[in-house]
Structures are given as C-alpha cells and as structure tokens.
Length: 116
Length: 106
Image (cartoon, rainbow over all chains, first blue to last red; front, side, top):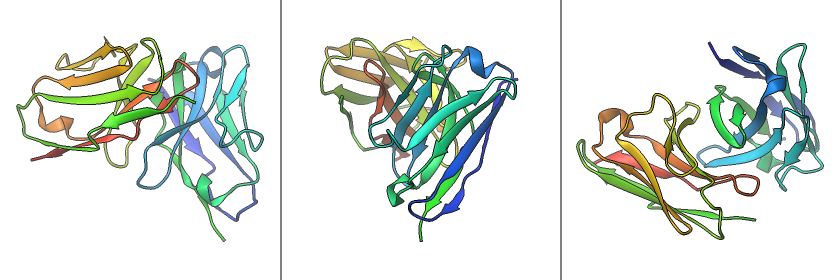
C-alpha cells in the first residue's frame, strides 16, 4: 500500500527554520518525482518544490533561496528544509508523489505556523 | 508566470445535476492540465490529468475537455460524495493551481 506521512511541522518564529520530513512506503522515493505543495489556512493550493528522480530540483519563486528539497533514498524519505521563515509561509504542507508534475498520491499534511 | 483562473468560485447544485467548472490559462499550456478534488481536512485527490485522462478508480461521471486555453471539468450526474472543492493545475511550465471551486449542496 502506498503511504506518505509528513512530520516536522509546528510553531516557529519569523526568521526561524524548520525541516519537514515525508516518510514513504509502497514505492521508492528516489525513483519518482516528489513534490511539496502547501495550503494556507482557508486558501487554495500552492506548489512549492519538486525533485526529479534524477535529482534536479525546482522551486516556486516565493520560496526560492529559502527552502531546499532533498531526499534520503536509504530512509525512503523526502525533506523540505525551510529557512528565513515568514508569516506568509504559514500553511499545511503536503508531500506528494508525481507522475511527472501530476500528483497522484498525497500525504495527510503537516501544519507550519510562523508567528511571534 | 502562468495564471489559472477558475470559475465559478462557488457552485450550488443538487444531486443528479450536471455541473461544469471552468479553468482558463493566461497563456497556452497545451493539454498539461489536471483536476483535483479536496474535501475539508483531507489531502487533494487526483481526478483527471492531461486534460481528459481519468485517473484509475475515478468514476466515469467525471470528464475533462479543452478549447484553446479554456479547460472544463464536467460531472455528469452529481452524487452526494462529489460535494467538495475542485482545483485545476497547469503543469506546462512549473505548476500553478487555480483558486478553487467549492461545490455546495443546493
């Protein structure tokens, strides 16, 4: 059974850092496109970042230079390192498996709150 | 950046109705458009990709089409489980989601 489980969310002050994890089962994280998508409270979906099976990465302009996507194939885990966090980064962060840039399997999400 | 404009923002309908949700791209995205369904507190669920390809397990009452840069999601006969929020997503150039359409019970 395919499963994605995010963790690492929480309350952080503006300017702080947080690392999100997404442990997957039922498939290999290194053999698939993997992405992060976020949703601010009461708002729509926003694509954040993607890592290709070959390792190439892309970021939304809103997070470029502050967030870093990575993976650990040995742990079958996807990560999102978030630095210089801002209030507008407050959201539920979902990890998702990509059929290219189409996201066919999603985790349940982890809430990140940036507030003083 | 490619902008996706979804309409309507809210749609009230009854079980059995045929409903249509539209998504317009700010420039050509070819057929690189997907549709997702999201229920409150849950992750989105992929319904359709590449404009009209139905994801495995999705009921055939869902369909998608394209006319130029305008894309349509149609539900042929609404079922109680279909009341949710729907998002379009372009993936021709990076990825952008529409702002969502909330489908409510009339």
